[in-house]
Amino acid sequence: MRDDDHRGGETPLDAVVRERGIDAPDAAGERGPPGGEAPAGDAAVSGPRVARVPADHDHDTFSVEGIDTDRREGLVEAVLRDVDGVSAASATRRNGTVGVHHDPSVSREALREVLAECGLVVAPGDEAFEARRAAQFASARVAVAVLFGLMVATPYIAVLYPTRVEWLFYDPVTVQYLQSILDSAMTTHFFINLGALSGLAFLVACAPAIRRAVAAARDGRFTNEAAFVGGVAALHGYSTLVAFAGVEGAVHYDLVAYAVVVATLWTEFGVTDTATDPASSDDAAAEATADEPVAMTDGGR
Image (cartoon, rainbow, N blue to C red; front, side, top):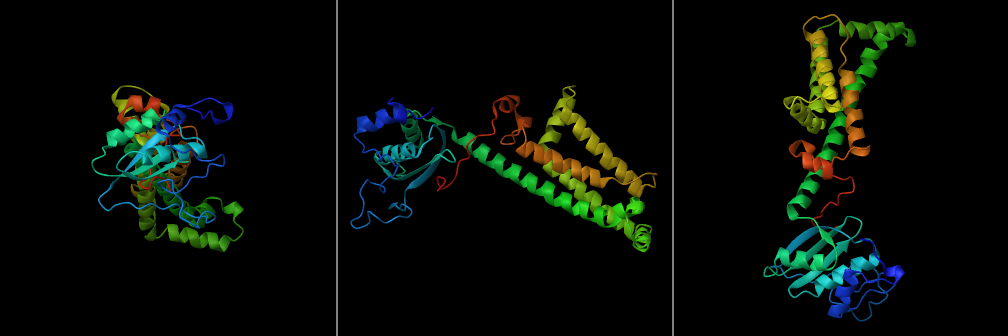
C-alpha cells in the first residue's frame, strides 16, 4: 500500500491516528521521543531516540509491508506507543520491520491486530524467522563458494596452468620445476586438497540446487538444475579418477570451483531468489520474491 500523504487521501493508518487523537509527526517526518514529550532544553539536540523499557517487558519483531515513508514510520510508532502496556516501539521502512517492547500481558496477536488495523500487511512470525534464516544461509553459501573457489584457483594459477600452457610462460626453467613437483609424491596431497575443497564448495554452496535436482530426478523430471548438478558431479568424479585411479586426462577441479562460484553468485544476485529454499515446498518457490523483508531482532535500528 502506498502512502497518500501528498495526494490528499486518508490511509487506514491516518484514520487510526485521527480516531485515537494521536499527534502526527511534522512534515519533515521528525518524531519526538517515546511518549510524545521532549525533555526541556533538548529540542535542538540530535541523536538516537531512547526509551525507558522495564526489565520484565517482552520484545517482539514483526515483518511488515506498507511502511514506505518517514512519516508513516512515525505514525506507526505513535500508534503502538498509544497501546496500553507498550513501553517502546520502533518502525523501519528500509527493512520493513517493527519492533515493540511491551508488558507480558499484551499478546503478540494483539499487537498484530493493531498493525493490521493500520493497513499494514504483517507476515506470520514463522515466515519472518524462515526468511531471516534463509537469508543468513544464502550469505553463508556465497562466502563458502567465493572463499573455497579462490583456494582452488590459486594452486591452479600458480602450478598447474603454467605447465599446461608452456608456450605462454616465459621461463622454461620454472615450468620444468613446476612439472617436477607434479611428478613427485606431493601430487597426491595436492589433489586431495583440491578435490576436498571443490567438493565441499559444491555440496555447501549448491545445497538447495542439489536438493531440487534430487527431487526432480525422483519425480522423473528433467530440469536445468538437474543438468547442472549432474554435470558438476560428473566432472568432479572424472577429475578424481584421473587424479587417483591413473585414468588418462586432466584434473579439472578448477572448473568445478568456477561453476560453483558462478552458479552461486548468479542465484544470489541474478534473477533467482534465494530468500527461501523451494526444495521443501513448490508453493514457496512460486511465492518467493527478492524483496522479502527481513525481520531484525532490534527493530532494524
